[in-house]
Length: 526
Image 1 (cartoon, rainbow, N blue to C red):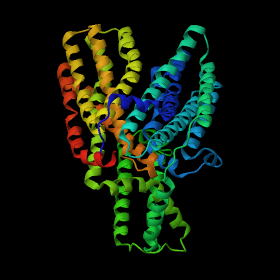
Image 2 (cartoon, rainbow, N blue to C red):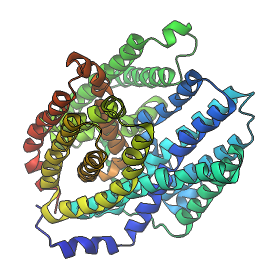
Image 3 (cartoon, helix red, strand yellow):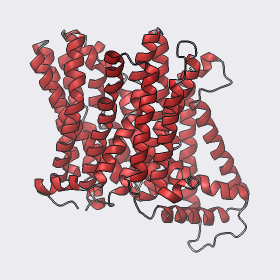
Image 4 (tube, rainbow, N blue to C red):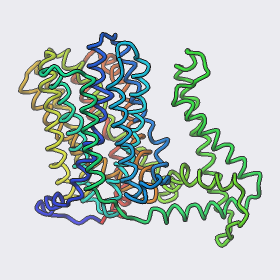
């Protein structure tokens, strides 16, 4: 159980040199979003592409929301030579940084006016490598913090958040300044951005230290367990499961890359995509349930078979890599508690997502100009997030992660009432600044606590896979439910005051689930 700390003790956490590495890795994580986001959007606009073309270019960001599908690979696959030289986490970070730099350099040589398809292909590759880099960086941040140290994890989460915003908003402003004031070309900017990534690679190689844990021991234990279970089931059942797992992976990959081979209307079919996702989830649930039944039937001291066939060996590797992270999460927590954790993750940021989705529409309808929105809503966000991420983490360190989540969640939801007041007052700049600052503070505070919570819920043998799975679930909740934010405003006939009151109350279900998790949090934290 976490014990209270003084404010001075909280500040001391930030003297740990590991947090500098986490901050720089945060910069490396945030910077690629500029390359495939605002920078390429501005370049496309300058070249003369339509809003539709620019909008569809943004589909490359799907790599970030689906990276959980290949995240287990970062836990299990050792890169030739690099892993021996740098370790599992740093080797993956360095390799992805190198590939991001190569993509930036390649983008600088593209004639964007004549070859949009090539630019999209490079941007998609860049997004894939950047999303994979995020997997490795998140796993590094969790592994480098002592297990069960929620206070250190809060500080690490704050530095990761501050680093991400520095890379995205701080370094991300440089290309626009150079293009706008010094008449540099956008192709030159991509060469410059590649150079920045090379500098980040130098830091990864020379300054970062590899975390140590018993990751391989946990993975080998899982492989041994699956070998005993499958060895007791003859040939037919393991072969059937191997085929089922390969079909699941093939369907997921086929869907992600755009369902090649189908007519255009079918490739864009949302019902078909949902059907594939539900089929894969149903197959995954069946597979985990079957494995648990086989485990319960197996004798504990059943020896591993000395004649494991190639398909069984492949199945053991695939099960340990792709199925065991989720199975272990449910096995460790129990089905009821695990479901409560996942529902909390899914619902915690819903109210904030509803606000964010409609914020610009709200500002315009209230009467703010584009310049006021840009200056007071966007520019202020960077420094507010950085400063208050650190201040929020000090609160979490002082009072513990559970209280940080509970109080931070309530404060995050209550800050929406500032926008309700703004809706009643009208286009008041002082009121807008106050609302943005309060919202930035509470959002940063709750985000740091939320990221720390996800981190301490991971098993160190499967850090990359479990964190990516939980983070994607949180993103899914914000994306799926917040898409109805406009419909909610319309159903209220544009009553923004009532809209913000409703979004304030949306925190309630997640806090109810959080109360069920208090004992679990106290059990895993020092």
